[in-house]
Image 1 (spheres, rainbow, N blue to C red):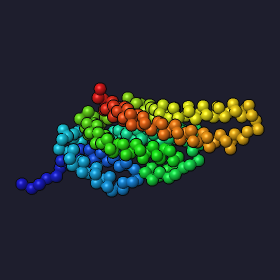
Image 2: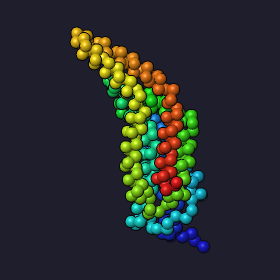
Image 3: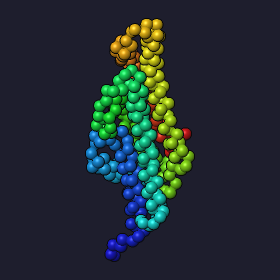
Image 4: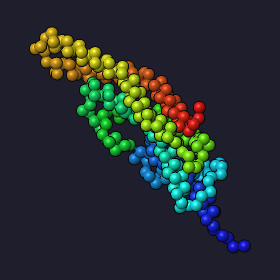
Length: 260
């Protein structure tokens, strides 16, 4: 009996392999560390193909549609949107500490000390780069990447392949999640910013009492030293803060998937 390759078989093959690949590849292109410029795109694509081959046998039945009709295009866009949305949630965890470093650096006078970030290809303050490196090492040391992939692969069970993706509620929650970055960054940077603000107010009172004193020559180095001391004190609670924000991030990823 000759082997016949029909449209139904092609559609099933597309749904069984390409749709999971779109979701996994879009997630791999956005997540921290793996999705940055430090990892070449061909390696990310190779990892996505490998994970797809491992995930496909675990998937259930996928919609049987023609390969090039409108429904197939909608399903493809939904898989890309799910991968990017979950990857953005994980990226927000890292950008939180970058924003906190920018807030502290601008208040203590280190805003002028910038350096190139090789991972994202942008210029950030030195303190933000220090926080970014610290968070990356903690993320890898605590096997955060394994937890992230575990939560992401659960999406194939909670959000099966189909025309229904994150939905309007999921997209609205992702939009509001941007505010969580700035609120959490402010809470993280608030002790150091407050300490530097008290020093600046003290020098303002001293300048008012003694106008002949050069506030720029005296206040800037003292404020910088006090800011560095505040950062050193805050490092003692860096790990608990990272653990708390990581738990909130993974909980939000599960919330996007409709899990309690």
